[in-house]
Length: 487
Ligand SMILES: Cc1cc2nc3c(=O)[nH]c(=O)nc-3n(C[C@H](O)[C@H](O)[C@H](O)COP(=O)(O)OP(=O)(O)OC[C@H]3O[C@@H](n4cnc5c(N)ncnc54)[C@H](O)[C@@H]3O)c2cc1C
Image (cartoon, helix red, strand yellow):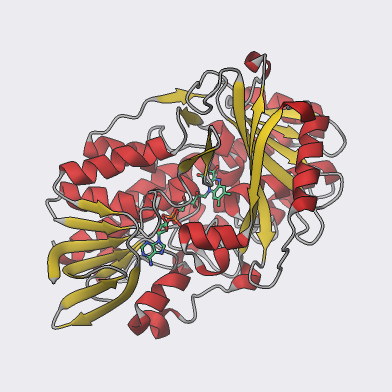
């Protein structure tokens, strides 16, 4: 039997759910299909051995004014019970120094000067902050970017300001250029710091990341950073509830296998059913989308990034006893490693703890969770079957840094590209989205119109799509383009 919907949305990642919420608000009957048994994809949480672990994302920004998540929640009238973090992040440098990434700009600049020297830190960070404010303000004003149709160009032109034209040129320069501009390129410690920070926010290093994206990524901690009790699945569940309250359906364990278009109607075939719809929104990576919707493969062949340009992640979930939870003043830590990890070459690991006051992440009192992740470049070709060596390095590093003692570890498990492929269905388990590359300017990034008709796309391979803020914005843009084109 074939069931008819207004719109079928593939996946329950943050991009897909954003578009589904906004379309549901518009009155469309939406069906969201998720291959996994849990919703959220790379922003989710799962229970194992008495602990709640995060599937991927752990840091959360985007709830301040002019930011995509705040916009989405206001549009659909959903409030999230969040905790604002006093200290967004700590960095542990290779030389043993610790650096606190304060939200307040002056406090942060003083900290950067303490560690990296006073030479030009202030003008560098003031410039980055100004750019980041501009980028956040512009991103919600320019909801038809990158423009492809006359209507998009007109909307962009109507909304454009002299400041936007002035700042746009920074998309042509790399963050490396920015370091040179402030005579900071030979400050080795600072370069290493910038590179590792960019890797977690822009998925690439300073030679490749343009100034607009790089400056914004570097100021990630200068905006409100939040935590949600019980894990980030509690960011996703309210969106699912909203869609269902509006009359939509969200089906888990249902994998989309094929999409075809005939007589202006889309047929979506899954492992369980056939559905038809007037519109389709793909919230899965472009690499997967062209597999399930082969008619679009030629259209996107030049934009497709392959494994050597992408990364998966090595990840560990650790449950540990902690008698004094108050000793953690920050829950997010980037630790630079003395030696790169063997085989995959990562030079830092990112560690996020459950919030000391969140009692819902562990069954037993005085227990906490550490989520650890690092990049695994070129996942199709760099295969490491035995991850024990990574696990031991991570455990030793965390013990050495005083996170816990070995005897306090209750349980741990780890995952690599194969687990990611299974959890998210993403081609060769790549995650984190399409990295920033200098040969891809913002206006050349993958855009929301998937087939030039009534199919659209969003998520972290679609402009500007990195991290939760980027994917939410990609979902907003997919919705705006669909609405302007057809509704
Ligand atoms: C280890 C790690 C750490 C991260 N840390 C952060 C962080 O701290 N902060 C941050 O903001 N971002 C972080 N990110 C990035 C962020 O999590 C992702 O960019 C974002 O969640 C991706 O959302 P998405 O909409 O692209 O879809 P995804 O999360 O990829 O979701 C796609 C969904 O589609 C489903 N699916 C796939 N194929 C099919 C199919 N054929 N049929 C039906 N369903 C299908 C998948 O199961 C999945 O649920 C991190 C990512 C990783 C991997």
